[in-house]
Length: 435
Image (cartoon, rainbow, N blue to C red; front, side, top):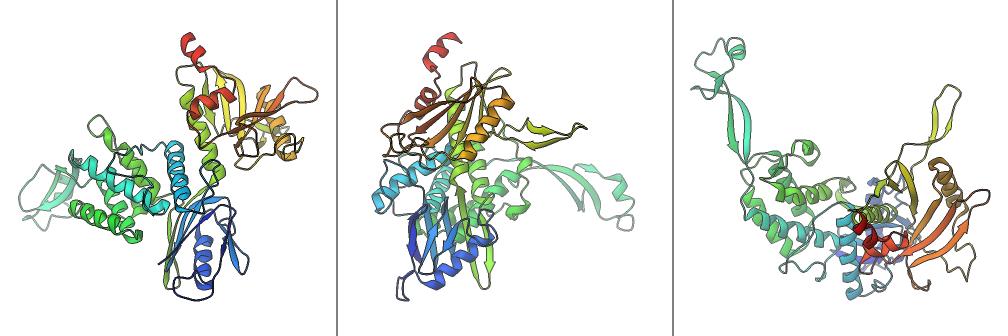
């Protein structure tokens, strides 16, 4: 198995055929898998572009694999290294897992027994390792069970008799009784989801340690029915005070089984992908982090607000719905609108426009008018070309009192909640005293 790691927007050389080389055949298989993903588009160029002698990663991170090869795409995060050595890749994986945990509301806190991202593993193997560790820990408290309704034809009465079925379909077989009963069983949807995740991960993991742990977990779930991942009834999983500790496992299993994780066939080869668009991940990470920072205040965050439209027709029909990334409200009042952009902004001294696109400015102006909000912000990730994280520019919008702020957030830094609140000019300490 050939393993390669590359940063977003970086190139992966295609090598001449030799032992351990990443060849043209490997590249073609990866591109074929990329075409089958929701992020790849019809030709796969949303994930990888083919430049003959090399592939170029796009603004999508995660793992994509095909027969004989695995490619890990990592984000560029300032302050964690270039991603060209194992030490920096480990740091980037740790931060990426943290961002995924925040964005998807996953409790990925692990103990000392799980060295998150410290081994030479891809992001996928790291997540599989976390899944195995947390599932093993929660199973120590026992496998969840519940009463399951059954309808069966038995030689002796169990539970209640289904009179209608007894005297219709079983009228000619009086030796069989149509029974309705409930059984306290472990064969419930939650356990079926765990078994499906264990089985799927066992098919794709290349780590001997993960494979061993998955085999042990498969033995634990031997008496639970095997349900295909697409047939799982996630809505039927009920979490209450008796099984609340399983919430993290449910969410992590769902992430690993659904969304952008797919299995596809390309001729005789198999491929899969676990991919995340960095624009979407950064947006969700900022929204969840800011929402957490504002707890205990009179402000709240709405992500992907879809209430308003740009135009209405004479008959009242609405057209061109707007969808700002983050809306900060106090009651019904909109106090700030934030759009996140996972790209590098320029220093103002180098470029008065800071590389901000004209379309983004027009979009923010429209948000200000539609939401009657004077405080607008474009938020970017911090990089070393900027003097320091925080506000980088403040502009007055012609013809009104609205202002547009450009700012950067240090994704690799500490105290991100407080830093983000400071960027948004929110005094958390003051508000915590007031409310």
